[in-house]
Length: 299
Length: 299
Image (cartoon, rainbow over all chains, first blue to last red; front, side, top):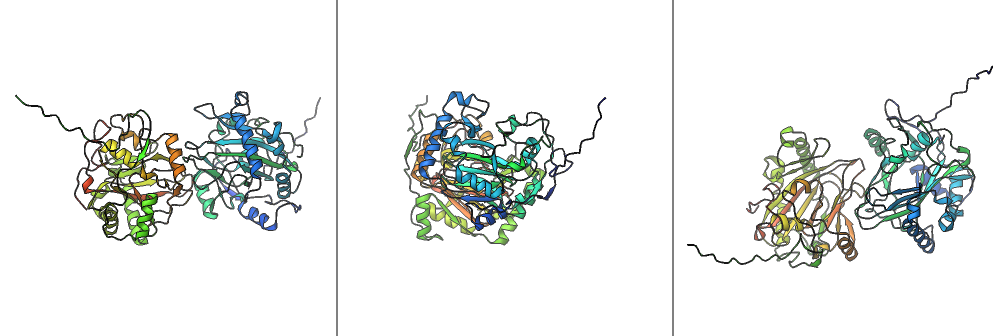
């Protein structure tokens, strides 16, 4: 005969989905974790702390940008790549829109995701060793680029991937110029200091739809209006080679792009090794490994 | 017995629609017509000549803007107004998106369309008396504002309304601030100096669809890429009360708007009385009077 020991109920620091009404509650975690030394100056850290975003223009050389962009183009044209599970294709044609888990590729791109400078910045912000939670390339075409609606990445990672706390940072590496009219990243400055819960249950295999068009995990109009009132909307702009670091919980999105200028980027998410994924907090099952890595080895 | 006299075939200065392939050909008309004196300085005229656009910040007082905006709000909430033929409603809900022929309304809005200052500027640019070819109010919501794809208004007015030559100017009167991220007017500087023809036949009653989403009368990707190469894309920005004049043939459009900030404007098209409409150049029948006025009385 076995004895059942009651298990401690898990603490959920940031309840969301299936809640009665959307709420905006204070963040419970630091923004800049610890005081590790690193490449960022105090002024950089202050900007990141205050706004949730840090834009570093021209962090990459033109040569490196060109080489990475060539590799992205080659991947986009490769039929084998387009048929992979890690590939997200455009609804109409078969054009490659995103490719996940590029940190596992051989070649320049895979090597770049462990780029010493980026990793050191991530370590400094997160105050610990880091691993790659998610990586992908995004190819956003000109003329018919679609908008991406407001969301906090952390809300999804917490609900659907089981990321317990806010201790992750994204790096968007611009391979093409981002100007005010080609659908650059928009953020609400300071919104990372609040947790904005979302109503609605997560359906099974939600990721298959949400990567194309997100509908669950989307804040309501009143919450967004309130966050925008608390802090200015900002555009993350810069030439190719710019890197935009943004905090995992900052409210962000992007408008569509009718301009002829495409937008391509490499997108990396660094998570603290002390913040490894658990079971999802508000979804029936974890998302696949290529969207939310459960290999927590430090880079 | 009647004698048939052969009629002179009509000259079409700007053939479009149903053509074999898109072409970009030089404009045959002046941009600034004649040398009438008026409120605009030589510098203004030069900007308009070069770019096809002239932004005049704060042309209207805050008081006038507030009064006009109140009237727009009242119209938007009026069920009788929403059921008129002149009203264009949002696809999903019944919210008012545009209301045409506001120059025929009583009240402040109707009076404003004959605003002395705007009319004098239009006369100066067009070198003659002017009449109102089209007028409307546009209510573009925040959060879910849709993009409007690239087009030349003249291409449509020529093909579908029978406007013979390029001698018209639009005035967009901003009732709310236009900032870089809430879907402001985008123009391709200098594109008004070229006529960009469009392939595809105009279907009957095309206006019923085209006012929501334009598909015919849209330039192809190669033409747009070439026009953008010839001249920089520009955003028309400014606080409420700003007036944006843009030449009838300048290539323009706007991105969507996920920001909470709505965009409302009064849109007026002045045409030279010497450029009155004829039969459409490339459509089975003229569009209705409220979209393209055939009352050519000077204001």
